[in-house]
Amino acid sequence: MDRELEEAKRLAEHAQSFIILVRGIRGTGKTRLVKRLFPDFRYVSCRSVKTRNLAQNAPEAFHSVYGSPLIIDDCEKAPRLIELEAAGAESRKLVLVGNPGHKELQKLRSGSRSPFMKIELTPVPEKHEAFEELIAGSKPQEAEIEIAGLACGALPSLNGTPPGHESDFWSDWTAAFMEETAESLLRVNDPESFYRFMKSTAAASGREINMSEIARGCGKTSMTVASWLQALSDACVIHELRPLKTEQRRPVKRSKALFADPGLAAYLLDAAEPGVLSRSPFLPGLMINEAACGLSGGIWGDPERISYYRDSNNVGIDLIYSRQGILHPISAASTEEQLRLKMKHFGVLEKLGENRSAGLMLVSEPELQRICTKCGVSSILFRAD
Image (cartoon, rainbow, N blue to C red; front, side, top):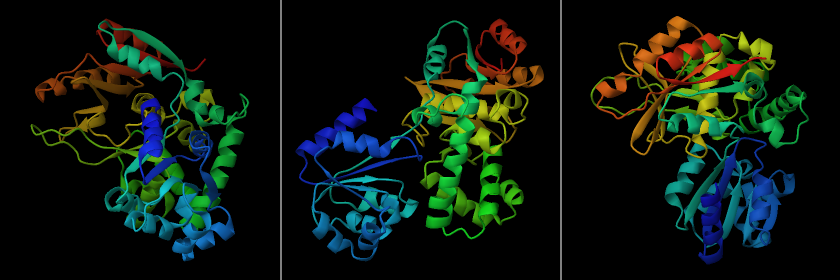
């Protein structure tokens, strides 16, 4: 982030006009960041009915009133204003804060005549260094992570939530998201179905997206599910993990769903208590989600850095992290049979002609960690006590 923020500062100091978009899941501190980064910019928020009405219905007059340089918060509430900025009719210094829809984001990227920069804030878990250190090691190493950290997530601590009150945070967060995004922006008239959809999506965390399965879980059509998944992606609640690009075999082309904060997925699955999560059938997917968050930082959606692999023979690697020309396979297992099979699958990268490390396994039992060490594979134990 430091490099991106310095680049944003240089752009603001030297460019005659620019558009900087700061996006991220609700609660990552977007507004606090831009106010600190651009203290001399005028600040307005489309959360205000008066401001939003002017921005949406008379975007040209909006700029006559507020001028430039300007910070526009909650910009997704005024898509017509974003379309005007994308057209680039006039030169302005603008910082947009919020999560515009997919179409508006594409227009900003391709249509703006002014320099455009996107910064995404990601709630990276505190223990992310453990993943990097284990991947970089030349010998098999062992590490432990308390499963309570996965169950709680990173956002509660970022927002100053006292320990032990993380469920209260997620309850308030979900209620606000349902009201401000699902019902207000998406015009969802069946919030109960949308909440079931979020729970079904949480159950798919770290796994390949199956539209039909999620549709059955919430009682909606696959077309509606596709639309709602795009909405969660636009709001930075989930991210798409795409398969590894390869020519030698026929990999599965479906993407995986990863939550920006696995703690939200655990909450939606009623597994926010460490003891409950440790016994949950969804734990392997959430462990993969946690590793992806720890390694990804700001590279979400970059298939050259983070991906996964599964072919038509059902040979698969849950997560692949690329660094300095080496692919690091990462998988999760909760049984010995599953563990040995997934470690065996790491070898598919060599058959594809790729340079790979010994890999990293995420496990939930001490005995599984000992097996990893004997096999020369580094491991992280998600400890429940």
